[in-house]
Length: 162
Image (tube, rainbow, N blue to C red):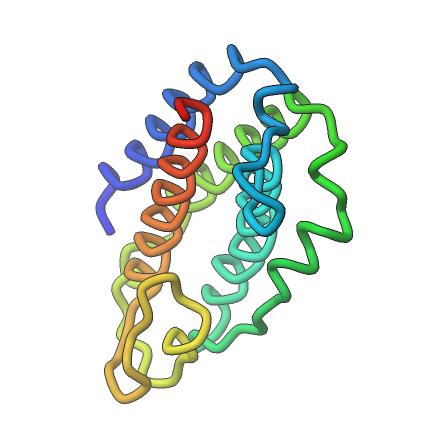
């Protein structure tokens, strides 16, 4: 992971925030169907992802493995009732949490970012999974986090444009 990657996370977040903040809360609450998330719920999921991955990125600096507990994503979104939360509050929390993660990433020494870890469970918890017998780095896991975030932002913008 190079410094440019952290800037990319910052740019992704700030660019998306600038567009998302202009969307009305009512539009953000619109669901394409009963079993699909609204933009509010997707942003809520991204807040949950930020929360979980912030802890993972921190713990990885003090461990020789990348083994982390998963979480029940659907349950988290439902139990926190993001659908009824204030849209602008969700956006500000999402932006600030990710800006802090971008700052955190810049603090991680390159040796820790690029250290190959033979023990991991990214075959289960990564967005783009890695076979259990393939070593991984924290840099890969961070890049995976950013790709996951971009994937869901595309979903949000597709929903809003529909």
